[in-house]
Length: 115
Image (tube, rainbow, N blue to C red):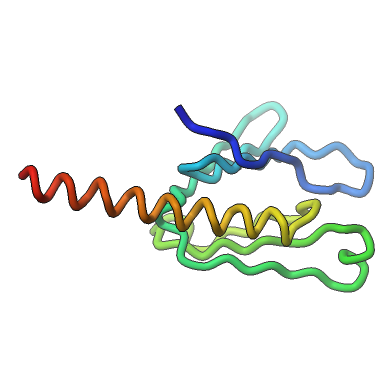
């Protein structure tokens, strides 16, 4: 069972957003669309780096972009746009990614030792 660490929608200046971000303890899930839904996932153990970008206007609004760099071949760089409290979300994402890497390594080591 996955635990949800954070979920939210991009700040869209009062306009409806048809994008939803969910960060669990094992993956990042991005759902987009109104009539046709597109779902993308990044496994947290693949995340290698996280960066935030906030210009002056975005800092005043309390939003920012989070860039996720991963070893995922289909999506090596993904940007979560206009996230409220972006630095706090990025910090939580970083901790979850580190925990996921540690957990994933433990599973790999166990499988090698058993095999």
